[in-house]
Amino acid sequence: PLKIARNYTAVPCSNGGASGWFWMDLFTVFPWDLIGFSSIRAVQFCRLLRMVRLVRVIKLCNRWHSRVGISYAMLNITKCAALTLGVLHWITCAWGWVALSSADGDVETWLTKYLGDNFDERPYVGASDVYSLAMYFSVMTLTGVGYGDVNPSGTPEVQLSIVTMFGSGFMWAWVIANVVNVVNNLDHYTTYFQQLSDDLNLLM
Image 1 (cartoon, rainbow, N blue to C red):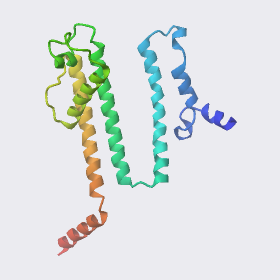
Image 2 (cartoon, helix red, strand yellow; image 1 turned 90 degrees about the vertical axis):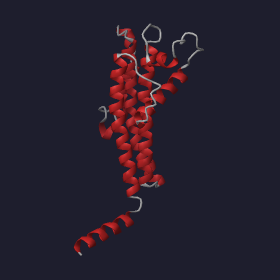
Image 3 (cartoon, one colour; image 1 turned 135 degrees about the horizontal axis):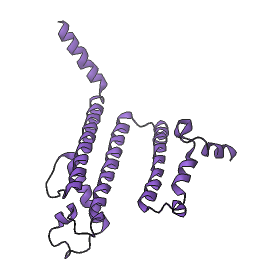
Image 4 (cartoon, rainbow, N blue to C red; image 1 turned 180 degrees about the horizontal axis):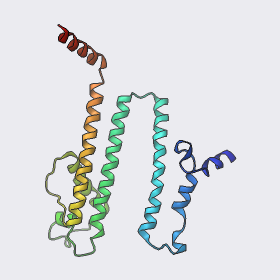
């Protein structure tokens, strides 16, 4: 127990990121409102810092990979899929927050624009519906399909759309490059034979 306590209260992110998580947990659970820090969004942001602990998932995945013995090709594909879903989730949350933060006002958002002019007469639109529509738009932007039925409305949403297009464009290019690299290396003997054949043809 003493060794665990020393490891937990060590210097933050020491020992390869495995020690010192006590200070991060203390910072995120500290009652900031009791000392006059009354901004709810700032407190929520501080609690979001606990997500830094997800870095430890990488070590757990490496440990699991060494035990199970899964191929590196499948591991790379799984990493690409997981990272893509994670990025899509955060983009979806950003667009959902933009829509819901202005839902009480008279500002037109992409959600009200999509639902049409009879937005107030429509049945209740739940959080799952907003998330599905935002995910729909995020996947369209990532893949470059662009049906055009969901469009940004207003300068803030246009700016967010620009960031989304740039980020998702680089993300999609990275995914395609990794998939192509994995497919090319599946049969490295054939690739090696073809390279030798090409070199031989150049010499002849």
